[in-house]
Amino acid sequence: MTPPTTGPSPDVAAPADVAGPGDLADPATDPSAVAARAAAVLAERTGAARHDVALVLGSGWQATADLVGTTVAQVPVTDLPGFPPPAALGHVGVVRSVEVPGAGGGAHRALVFASRTHLYEGRGVRPVVHAVRTAAAAGCSTIVLTNGCGGLDPSWGPGTPVLVSDHINLTATSPLEGATFVDLTDLYSARLRALAREVDPSLPEGVYVQFRGPHYETPAEVAMAGRMGGHLVGMSTTLEAIAARQAGMEVLGISLVTNLAAGVGDRPLDAQEVVDAGRAAGPRIGALLADVVRRVLAAGPA
Image (cartoon, rainbow, N blue to C red):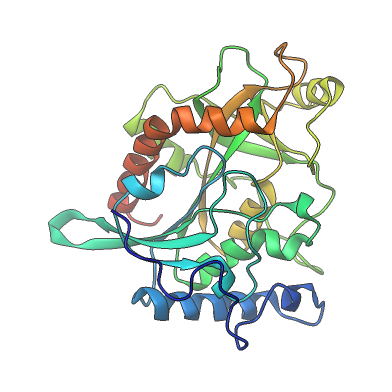
């Protein structure tokens, strides 16, 4: 059973001294400083000076938060500097601090973001990657990025989890600012994918292609993504992964195929269908991801 939310409810306005997303919109603001302030609030509210791993839960992955360990505290995102309320259907505006049992009686702490900010919300790139930077400031050395997506492989029916091996960023933007050059050759950790396959050897992998959204892709755009080497299409994840690499975190990406992409299947695309497919697969993929997280924590950082 989840403990009561720490602090004001999501319906109560944040205190006047807690900054909102406007700080990140100011080009003069250092986004790392806002992330550090958010991490400090999390440390105070959760009683944990640092966390070990972070999870960003996309569409269909919400059940993971209840399965990965014991929720010690949860904080409304609107109580944290720089976080707007969630806008996507099915996302929940809280951050959980979850205690995960470890070997020898020890315990790890996981920071679980039950929502994310999408680029299509029009807030800019900084809010999109703010959870990642906050997780890094909170001490996390590993991050698990999940999403619901369209699949290009007809054998991957709705409810199929797929490890992300690489990505193609078609958003025409980046979370990196100025002359900041970051190597993305091995962005999605082969080590973490191998640990995930220790839990489920049948997990396929593929290249995730991010479009800006919020409209779904056309059949021609999906065909283009396939010719470019893509296997999955969606509207999140790639910018977060880049920001995580910049922060020095090891990245594991897992997509949930919620529907066949436009032109691959013969059904029209619908946001409710995505939510329904995720809900149907929730207990199974939640248990899978919880096992993967525990395996990753037991293995320790790279």
